[in-house]
Length: 159
Image (tube, rainbow, N blue to C red; front, side, top):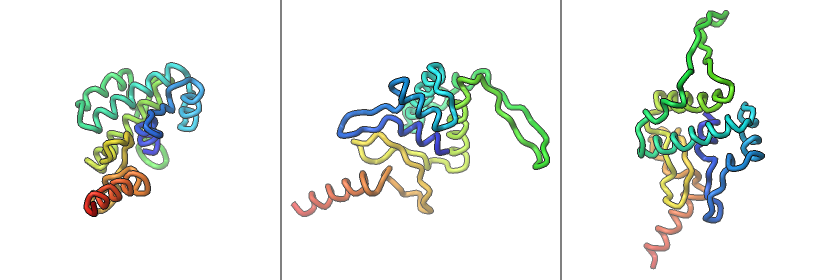
């Protein structure tokens, strides 16, 4: 699940300019390796494709069907272990990390429907996973976006 949020949040706005953790081969390789990937160019291209498709799906701009091409050639093999039944995902090596992120999104939607969402700050491109009991979290960070919005509303009320 960490890789899912990290991938969705890999294109933040910093001082009004978009930064892309997967934008150049060196930083992309570093990001992929930190998340268990190899950092090959093919893997990075697929990660960027997965990120963009997932962002559109989470924002409600695209149907989850846009994720289907990312799962082509992927299958699961059941294995009986001492712990019981375990499913192993088989995928081309360069696609493994992107597939894991798509599967993490699907598991999140099943376990916590509607809780993965974009930050309510229009000037922010980040996403959050609302783990609150009331399901009312709106900001990627209360210290950053939430505080700015509250300060803006307070300023408008007191003007």
